[in-house]
Image (cartoon, rainbow, N blue to C red; front, side):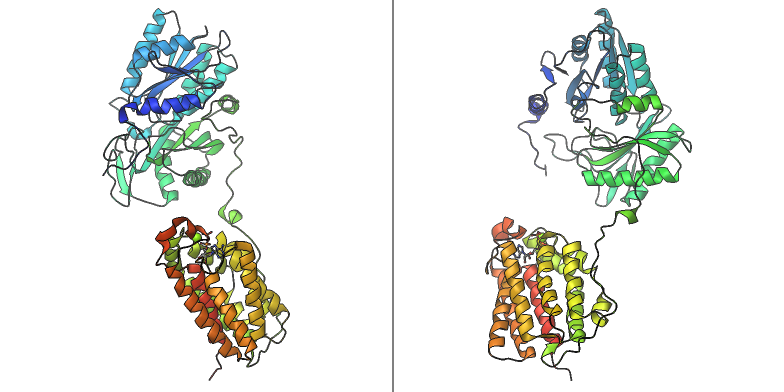
Length: 577
Ligand code: ADP
Ligand code: MG
């Protein structure tokens, strides 16, 4: 089945998109007759002009790289098909400022022919044109045939030539820098999912689940090799090796390293690939001088990425570093490469309370001492960790799916054996609170952290252990703090629905002079009933509230975890033997 796309009609797709581009870019003008884009700002007389173009669907290439310091104009074709010769001729005339025009052409037969013809026609008009071919894709490297395809290296050529022209170099010099860049650039791409052409019923090729395609191009054409998905580090090696081989890169060679997204890859995934690429090049002794990560040369909505290396020298780097106001170029590109930090230096770190020299809190029949609190919280932590998949599932059905991860992110940082065997009650709760506040995210991290903070405060003032009154006071303070912070009321389908009935049960047990074990058992029942009842509610707080009725029938995971906390307390308080 066709998946929905943003479009009115496949026929008007390119024009409809160009309307938005022109409307949102100051220095970009559309010339409908016969169809090309130029800068609005005229070039200084005598400056070399730069023109590129090609099929649409690769944005921000080329229109996004029209601007001071990069292209003077661009000729868009229809989706994935080259512009025609008359477009290119008219654009060449329009951009020429007397210094001649450089055509930057990706190596596809249609593009090459139309730019060639236009170059000849421009000569009739008295304009000197230099033609630079970009042919970087190593997957299409073979003895016969049309030669390597032009892909992401195009932006490097456009950048270098643009800077050279902008500083006033003459036509021959600009063209020579462009050719030097193209000669020293190679790329290789992988797709996780093919692109779908506007209006098409299906992606350009099918990839079975779990498979990826190496050596794909930027027009939805199939790749050279279909393989099982693999870890990113290995994938980066598979992409980089042929690039290094084709360029003949030696240890110590300086390169510009580009990770390019093909349309649907996420920025985080591209950053991850770059980290792997930097590690791999460091292993091989290849010196990254500049880096660039982002989606610059795309293939519609292809989910995939390419790696480009450009062997460079100081002259090329000067041109790379020169400023440009083309909107598709990052406005703060990285300068001299400083290396990637190793993984251990990147871990989130935050200290969780821990003390080795704990004084014992013996506890009594009416108060939980060190050993009982250790059993209580030790069992609670283990239960929550073991139930992570179920908690995640509940939050996925009724919220956004991060609840289980948040619990684990926090609880992975507490030391269960010290909770069971070493820590005094106050430290147990302090470490739990620190772990939630310092290592979990989301609503639950904050609220659980604050909840356990109240138990820490109460326990710190209870040298003889936690009796029913102390537990009731801590739970009351926790409830008040959570309501004050989160604004939830009973019935909003949150952890409040498990806490409020438990607090009421604890307070009436204290008033009735019930035993510790009896009071906790009543709180447990009340809390479990409150938690179960959340299944019948629709959420009015938290991210579950965004999905309304769809959350009905699903128990609130926060409430469920709180009900376990009371259940484990009752268990730990049961008279032994
Ligand atoms: P989110 O994804 O909403 O940021 P989590 O997934 O970390 O939060 O936690 C969700 C849990 O937090 C819910 O199960 C619910 O019990 C609780 N919760 C959400 N909002 C509130 C609130 N305003 N007050 C009390 N508890 C809340
Ligand atoms: Mg959530």
